[in-house]
Amino acid sequence: MSVALQFKLTQTGQAAVWNANNTGTSLNLTHIQFGSGNRAPSGTETALLTPQQAVAIAAGFSVSSTQIRMSAIFSGNQNYVVREVGLWAGDPAVGGSKLVGYWSQAAGDLAMKSPGVDFIFSHDMTLDAAVPAGSLTILADNAQSAMLAMITAHEAAANPHNQYATKAAVQAQTYTAFTTAGAAPTFTLAANPAIAAYAAGQRFRVKFGAAGNGADTLNVNALGAKSLKQFNQTGAKINAVITANQLVDIEYDGADFVLLDPIPGGLSAPFLSYGGTTTLTDVALGKAIALYGAAPYTLTLPVSAAANAGGVISFTAQQGSTTVTIAGQSSQTIQARGVAVSALAMQPGDTLMLVSGGGGWYVMGGSAQSGYAFSRHVISPASRVANTNYTNTTGKVMTIHAQFSAAAAVHPWITTGGTSIGDYKQAGDAGYGIRVTTVVLPGETYQWSYNNALAVPTLNNWIETY
Image (cartoon, rainbow, N blue to C red):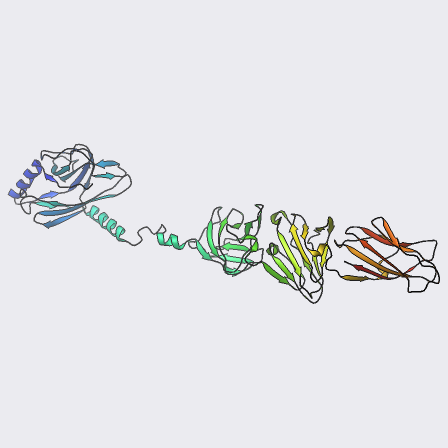
């Protein structure tokens, strides 16, 4: 509800005005006083009921012969309700000062003065016929006038508090959103305003200007490079997956810059291809990898560690490609059908799915572990010595074809998994020789031998198919 603020000229004030008029002078209004009392003005008031704060008039002038305008600034830490206002000729705290005009009401509040907040009071006072023209003037305090001018300019400024972010700057993320410079693996960022030191909890909205390589760092305001990480599904920090023009929130956790909304499993670029010897990084996690090439080569897996445990890589050997060896790194093995092998060979058409176990790799599927896509390997007879154990380390089922010959009666065999399979040739039998075929499971040992009571056979051919 609005309040009509009309000052009543007090009897003391009226007498002072007439006295000034009779002497050819004017009465100077110098102070405005706030109080917290309530009463209906009668004109007999000489002071406020509950005075709170009096200040010098900061600005004022005569608008017309019957109207004067005045302003004052109530500063400080006072806290009170304004229920009465007095206009004074002189400082109320000094003897001889006179209460010239008074406003209040029987009940209700006019305003609230809060601590630490400047209260600017501005009012146009209408003079009645009891006040001779020119007999009442405003005497403003120059210091208060300068302060009022400063506050007025402050309120009119487009951005009066430039130490604070404007709403528009907050919406545009002017002080938090930046684009990186540099290229993988060493990105840089120029935050503005610049940060003086790294501190846990610092957060930026970043647009990466280039793709990462799986072991990237970010250097903010030349304070030093920090690793870029993201969390995997187990809650472990792993190297971040970064693509060109990727938008992401990053936060410094006291050790690394962590991507808070990373690309899940590298889904933005799910397909990779290789045609030659390469050592993979964590970027390969979550990817499907196509293998091609004309000459055999080796693809080395990333180091399997707690940070990338659960990460999956899928391989497909394209039709017409060569043999590709998938090998572990740093002496890490691949568990295939319960057997730890250092590498698996993929033939054209083979598929293979591997998962990081945190300290080694495990085959989760694909034909490469079962040998659905076979390849024939001709072994030099000198590499398969009689009565010597060899182990099937391929991780796949192996078929052995051996051919023997002798001029006399012979009885060779191949033993694997505790079972021996062989053949017998009598002296003078026609034909090239003896053929023995057997199957060796992954991890089993195998050797060939013969009957010592007969002639020693000659190994002519040894072929392993897996």
